[in-house]
View 1 (cartoon, rainbow, N blue to C red):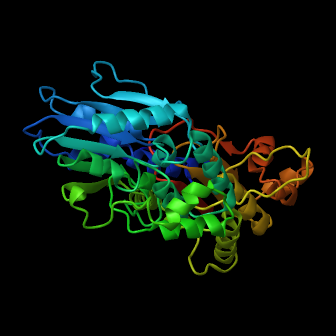
View 2 (tube, rainbow, N blue to C red; view 1 turned 180 degrees about the vertical axis):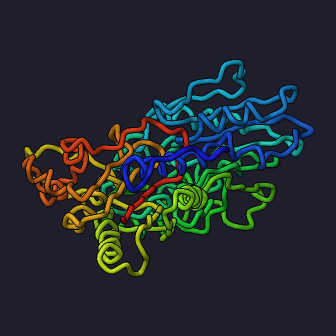
View 3 (cartoon, helix red, strand yellow; view 1 turned 180 degrees about the horizontal axis):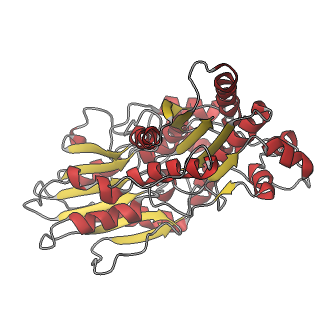
Length: 441
């Protein structure tokens, strides 16, 4: 990849931050990263299965990079609207279907059933390439015995609103599924299974990405029950009893059915943050990657970032200006209950981070920020994230907007939309999760 020209951070701070976001996203595009991880064609057939927000782009990249004379077929499911335009002259060999995210729907159920059916009857000579990326947990839904799709939808919705960490949510999802938590790889045995994954989770644990459909699962039914109890999420009595008896256990490390299953990470949050940092340094701005594994309540993470930025702006410590602070990971939003008749708040992790950040910055001079989800969608709205500037609070006050009120209603979208400070990219066709950048001049 050639390094793009970027805006002058001193005269165009917000366009400069958007440049860094675009560079981070570009680093995670499958066409740039997939080729180095591909094996040669097998003696038998090559089957492609997959799920995730990057699924459409990963399938196209594989079609472009796989030998034209080598057979290739399969099925991948991605989110509605996340199939990239097909390049001219690129023949389609992998079927791509769309389903709902973050709450599963009937299309995702149908795709999961078809994928499990395709995995039947494979031999030792066959190769299964699984294209896995964030969002696959919702897109690849096959409820455990005793659960209907409506049950999975409700449980998923309540998990999303609970403030549970991604690892906790996926622990539950694995044990309430017939395809996640290593079960897809088990279904493919005795074929070789090569999982090519784009990580969207703190720590890049392959068993957490899309709930690890091809990865042995060390968590237990008891762990899943603990999460459900911690967040007071109800499940049918017979399913609860099945968990208590350990009847919904996932394939564990050492399971012989997964002996020929391998995972390769083709893109990670750390790599994207490093690309953004390199671009900032090339523009003469010191760059500090705080972490690619940050978790916690979005608004609270925003406050922590604000405290650090204010220290730099006021005291040149612990970093010296000018500099940019970069971070990634996956924060959470706990949706607060509202009085009857109150309009539903609109907002995701990145927007709520920016609300908490703006509130804590208190109009600090010399600090600009951008936070966005690298898949281009912050929660369920049409924006990727939002921007914060030194005059954000002053403009909000002039418009009659209250940061505290919008935080109470989890309505970051409404706040930043009114200010014209939403970041809108459309689907990016990849997903390495949260991207945050604070420029301090």
